Length: 432
Image (cartoon, rainbow, N blue to C red):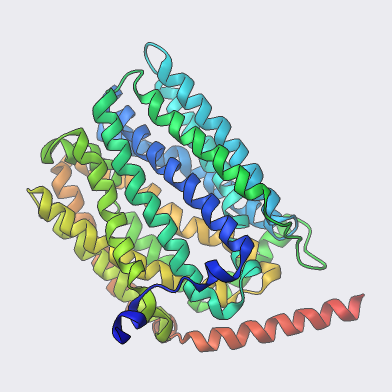
């Protein structure tokens, strides 16, 4: 029992902090619906075109608006009420989901509209996500950040497990035509529920003497990120892992080989299942201080799981590879989030959250193009396997090239943040 208590996820932040609890519920509901749409759009494009490269091009449509608006969203998150930005993002996403619903009801869905909505949704995500990430350290104290990181991951993985599974069942039940309207309608409903919970939260005003959004303020955030080897390490290690070994664009084609549309949801859910298992047993992470080394080991294990997945010709082995990869990704995510939220001063948190969002979003988007392009020449399985191999090789190379990140100790980051925030408070007081 003592061992189980040490391993079990810490739920105390949900009990102690009302606004964090409201945010947690709101984002759980909306993430569930978004995962349903996340599965459905690639599936719809697959059925309209039959071309893995065209499915992978979703990432190209999302990449540019995400990069541009990620920097803008980060600057806004340090200047405006972060809760208002999150609320506004939900309203815009609701409207875009409405467009998908209408498009699914016409005789022949417009392919160009699917790409357009993907691009606009990425732009909205770039505006909203930094504010969402920046809310966390304002709602809970610093010593609870590891527990909050695990809970946030659990929220994401619960949605990632349930949403794709239900999407696969709905697609199998209603088909590819107007039946997809039911899928998009569910996502639409989740945004309405999320908005209700967000409306009950208290306002989260910006830090005192907040920097006005400008190119100069964005450059300040970028310079700060580059100056911190532990932050830079989290970015490049994760980009390497995701760019080479995130084969989600190929799932619709692999599902045909492993059992059909009903299997599609299981493939998406496999990564989330592994992540959830790692999260539920994440109590041990708060006793680990070598956060950089933990991220490196987890990224390498992710690549190994993807190699197993690519080699598999049976559903059970494919799921085992995805579960291993998902668990490793979850461990990496917990330690990366802990590094970010325990060490970055609040007046820079929004801008750095924008950079973080790009670090964990750009890789999967690039991987869609990489995996789709390689699949044309070496087959779907070969694309997945070689992606995993390149991920492991790149992780080893980065571990050797980033010795300060490899040796990073989380206790040093906490002390640095306390010093930087004290210096900031003294500067604000002297200029008042």
